[in-house]
Image 1 (cartoon, rainbow, N blue to C red):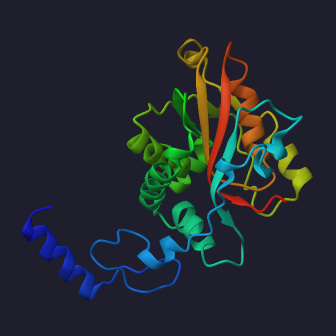
Image 2 (image 1 turned 135 degrees about the horizontal axis):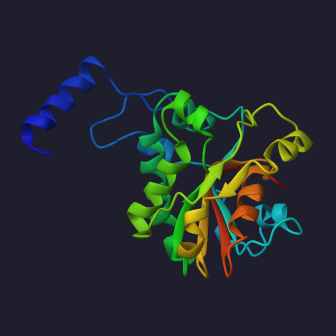
Length: 235
């Protein structure tokens, strides 16, 4: 960034201060989206360090996955829930991309991403994409790719508008997600024998990730691991 751009950004921060979505305090120049204090206090799960962790247990017996982790814990009453809300509904998907790039750097030493070949985001139905203007999971996948150097492949389709999962119970979420996703016919050969990292914003019941995993596993030799920016406490 040149000096003129830096001065312009500093001036904008004076008259239209950018605020941390967690604490509401003004961000300084080198805090792109979340203040240092809130980022340091992020309620990390560290699930990637636990064998057969609670997220992996959620899918046991339902769909064969390699491994799974969520970066931080989601709780509706927590101020950190505002991060997901802003990414998904307030046109701030770039914050998600920045945060997953940070997460990938944080998790890389754990070996969680070892031998992953390709990143696949959970898709949005075209009607929802047109209304929202972006798919937040695509931005999350881009952030991981930015750090890990892995390709992002939009290999899945949302085949019908199944509505929001937010206010549904576990059974309704599962029924709502079944048969809602399919593999793009042109991507089967590209994904054959690959280890895929399936990416979404948050996991609660796991219905969406389960349905998407089943669609990916129709390809010969595919293995699937799961990464979400956040996860509900599943224990």
